[in-house]
Image (tube, rainbow, N blue to C red; front, side, top):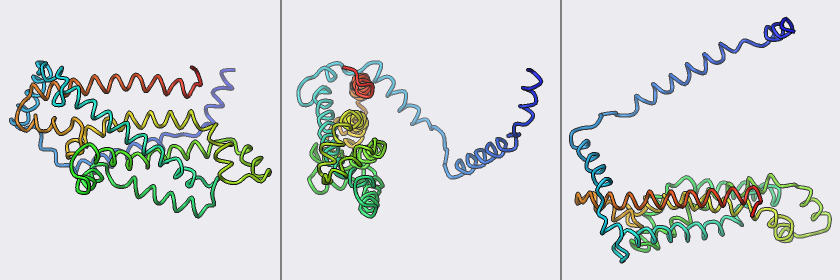
Length: 271
């Protein structure tokens, strides 16, 4: 038996050259990448800034953290959640027709190709650029954040939606086609009931991402807790910075736990 195994192993191809080539390519790309990055290290001012942030987290402004007025951390976190939630809902609703227009199993190939190009164009522009553009149109505030979250959500959600659509059992569509059903009827009665759980799971996942992005958008004035955070850092109010960061960490952890449980139940089909 051992001789048969040795003989079989002797027939196996030698992959040393293959793995060596891969390692050399990766190392060459790593060296090439480091040449394009200016690594200057931390100066004295940067080290002091990092120490002050840590001190602010260790000794936060508890009055600011537990202030439930419109100027407190609780309200700012609530506004951030509202921006992320509304942006996710609007983006997921708009992504549904777009995702079906991207699926070649539902529409013709030219229509699917043009729609995919449109979605690629949407995904190419960073969320901060959308935020700055909408701020110019609507002015600074939460409304610009909601519009930004809606547009940026379309690209990712529709891409994940169409993957689910393309992996469906096509026998349902073929049966409905043979019955003379229209495209709307195939989507409404043959596809949507099968896609509901996967679509909802994707929407929850995107909300988790939007909650983090909404914080960043606040830095450019699109509402949420990001703007007070940058103002507190610029004015060296490190205790307030610590209070905001603690609130953000607790919020993200809570949403992470809840979203993971919901998504696991939706995927598994349990109640």
